[in-house]
Length: 112
Length: 112
Image (cartoon, rainbow over all chains, first blue to last red; front, side):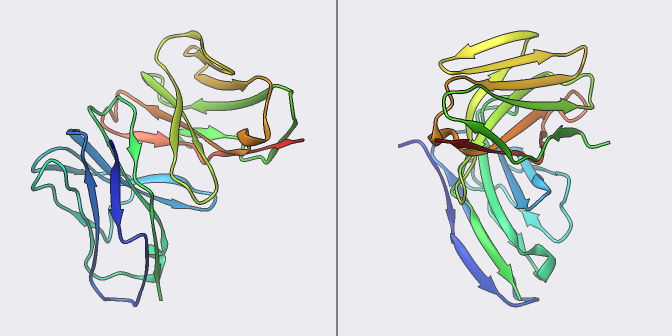
């Protein structure tokens, strides 16, 4: 089954404790992206990747890191999480940027 | 001005009626336009995309694009309670060819 998976689905952590949210797709897509969704603000892009070892900032990259060492994986790293990073996070992938994006199930992160 | 704007709603429509969702965008060079549906607590799923001026129909859904007015809409005919969801308009522009920009979404409720 073609899909985008994310782990964990739910995470409660404390300020400053490094965490990684994994994202993996099995569709051989070149383009992958991370979004955060907040009430009233919609989906905002954090980082995207055009291919292996090619990443770039989206609209709200501060406080986040990403890497793309393999085509299928695109982890999101929060080196020192803060409460303002409490949000619902989605990973997405598409064959190329202008095509339909397939979204993962989401990760609900709470930073206290 | 936001890059992509939607009426946040909520929009309430009786069952069987036509639901009309609207979206405007600021980048005149935008090329690709998408409508996603998001049920509460779920990830967005693509329901329509449109690239050319005019109408595009898919079952009960019709997307309409007017590039001169920088306006894209989604019509849902014969609305069903299962259509109750938040609808997200998304645009890819020339300046941000790799970036999919979302509106804040319109919450639609179909009343039986």
